[in-house]
Image (cartoon, rainbow, N blue to C red; front, side, top):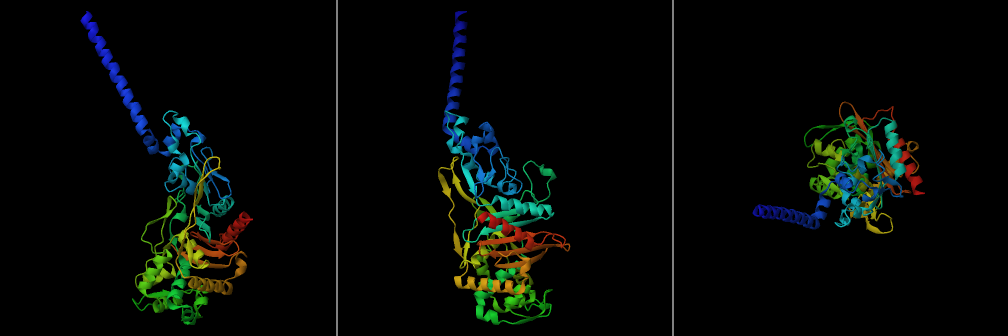
Length: 453
């Protein structure tokens, strides 16, 4: 009996020892790897771990300090496709890509547990203007238009507006949303239409020289045959004698087709397009920690598809690349890299942790940029009905992109010197009963001007 009691006592002792050993290993593992586990948590799991308290996650603000998102205030539908949510429904969004900064995971302490996460996350300030973004989204939605409106500070690359429709809010059922509601179209490409003729003009000035280009004459008869493959380029704009200014103003396809064949070399054009940012081999370009789809302009010879790519119907361009190119024309050839996150601070905004510094790249000589800007401004002032455009516009270029089934996208890009703003917009499947691109631009510049005062 005594032996049996002693045996049981040793068994209980061994079990207790094993339990304490396991507990000790668990505590040691937690102490050693606790932070790693915290780092690997999804945003939603992290919030759950930290009891979902507002203090466990930073907030997003616009350029003027207006709240865009917090743990207790979801993003407005005008911002949702960019800002996202902790549920990671939109992977290419600020909340998802900047989750480490917003959540402050590095502040975790084993001894304090979840309580140590209170207030550890950082706040982010975006470059967007709230009132402009909301106004443009509301305007397009009220008109039943799918499309995009982009604008940037032409000196710095700060993205002031990235409106995209159809839009959606975080409370809406995903299954009920129209196609594209969770994608911000400014981060993807769109068919350039005749806005591409500005890029072609820069290529022509750069390779032929301004004097030779201004002297280059051509008579439009509504169609012309390409020498390389015998295909026909058609033009439905005003026919008759054309020079570079009238061709840019009237958007004459055949003038540009002729000039491209006569004045542009394949090698120099390919290299220049890459320098301009339109022939990047990168499928995705960085936008801070987000990405955007790079432009795809394929010019390899003087056959129809290559020539047409510089006229606009084949080329797929990024709105952000178009903003940078426009900015360069009015800033000595210096193209600013677009950016969305301006700064990162602590939760009380008393300590600046990260400040985005503008980055510029020379894509054109200052002389060439000035000459192209001058041609563009002259074409706008001479051949455009300026009564249709807001007074702030310095130069504008319209475009029409045929997208099949007799549907067209209406495009407009431009620059406003007093605001130093470049803009680009695309209204998809547009018809004449809807608001015009010029009216959209008017509201855009009106809101940006109000924000600037």
